[in-house]
Image (tube, rainbow, N blue to C red):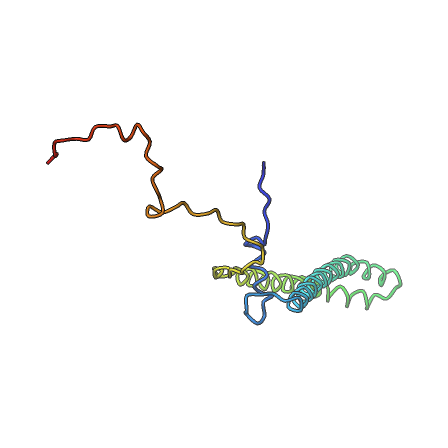
Length: 169
């Protein structure tokens, strides 16, 4: 039969140490609410950052794909000077967009690697022991000591026994 585990696991305890802002070893409901709000906002910020990266990537991709189309449209509209200028700028445009996307992704990867290195927590201090208000089971009575022990009344068989006459040295 499996044993029921109760209490807080060590991982959860280590995570909740961050929530203990005043360092008293007890996480109050106000501290827990503040900690959970901070974690919620942190997750929202990470989500917004991923969305921004996704939008920037799609914008750069569509810009690179539509750039040649604008040259073709300018030539089709008989605006050859515009098509030539757009064509002359193309190498610079592609390199600049690629560098912008690479720099953005590289900076985010560097920041997240530094964050993950800093996220390794130091060894946790010993967990505080709290007294519980559970009733303790009654203790059984202690066995009698040697001084309290009394011999039962002597029986007839014990009195008829012969006593030794020799002294053993």
